Length: 262
Ligand SMILES: [Zn+2]
Image (cartoon, rainbow, N blue to C red; front, side, top):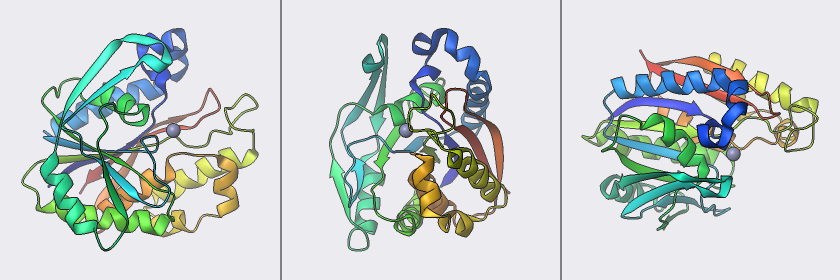
């Protein structure tokens, strides 16, 4: 059963050994992640489905990483100390595979190391969940509707499972907010982030799905497809979105949002 769901960002600078002094500049995000961790812990999850934009992405197929366990580290960002390890959840993975196959393209992969899109949120969210099972999913470049449908199919297996399941949609908002953004600056970046948050607060998923493709393009986000899968999973649930934080001091929008079931 689904017990928790949230959106969160994945900047490696959120990891204290990497962010160092810069962490002060994203304190709102860090505090929101800590709050999210408390809420997640209170929901007593046994399994976390983590949707990341940065796994081994296959443009025309969704992918599930079905390794026997997972490791995570931040060596590519200069941190050689932090090491995480997680158990896998083969049963739910196989159930989702059976349900999705024939309806949407899906591949199973087997990769030891989690990408930073999964590892950064899990660093915060599993602080007190040492025994948690993980199911890493990577989105595709198929259209938004297909991502929503993939989520709807996953939802059926999540609802049927006896396990208490949390879904975390990892993704950053616009990478074009300021002149020193990683992507080329565009005023469309801030416009996209604002519009997305407005639609989110109104639970207007159709509005998000119909957002102008040029606006999305210029915004240079990486989270939208992760979020679309989550919206598919949440479809027909009664929930209230709660924005815990939004900020973009380094030119990338970081959004932390929890979806409370009502
Ligand atoms: Zn990203």
